Image (tube, rainbow, N blue to C red; front, side):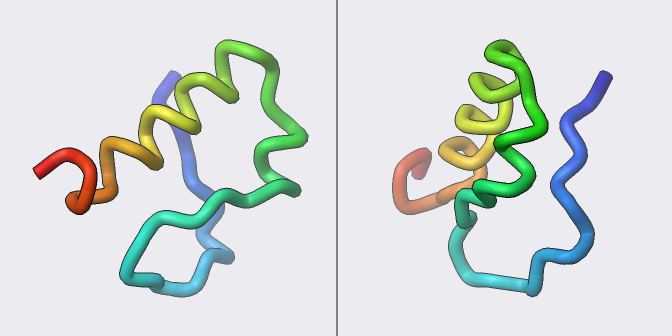
Length: 46
């Protein structure tokens, strides 16, 4: 199942951790959420 970032997030230049969304995830979901946030930050991956 693909990770869905909540659509309520405003457009920001960098990914931001959402505590409310993260609290709904299990351990594998948290790992995927964390990895997706890091992977979407071009300051880190480029």
